[in-house]
Length: 226
Image 1 (cartoon, rainbow, N blue to C red):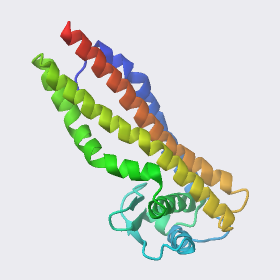
Image 2: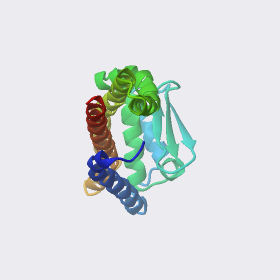
Image 3: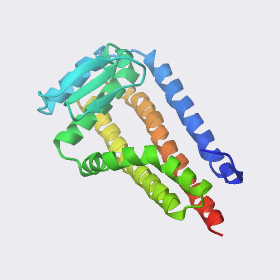
């Protein structure tokens, strides 16, 4: 946005976000080198868990990039990066099972996921428009624009907050799938959990950054109105 003394409020959260990104990359890289005892690939695990849950209509595809794995509810597709799709590591299996967890959530109409899906259009618009609107209102002392920008920002933050239980639940499901199916040994489950916990930390950090940024906007609006 722009620099002012209130920016210091956001700095701790930004450092936390940098740490979270480092943590997920380092943890993923560490367990990417550790082959699982069963030797299944991420795509095989994803397909098997989907079939076990009756989700034969959900496809599993390879995509480019690193840590770009996701479930697309619009096309009923689990998309896995190359390291996960073809990998046999503990990290690959954990990530693959996590994305399948989202597919199972979708099939079971998991309430927080449905809420997040409903919030997405507003949150997407809010993330794009919040700062420009607030900045214009701030520069021209137009309080209504600042207020609209803040509400857009609140919508985006709400989406991030709802994302937390969705991600935590998908990770719990993933560990359950891997353990119950015998795809990971008892000693390997905590390692997969470490990968998923590190990934979840990035979502927590994103909420922290947005929350402190919201506080900053409220303070700036209060100063401008004096």
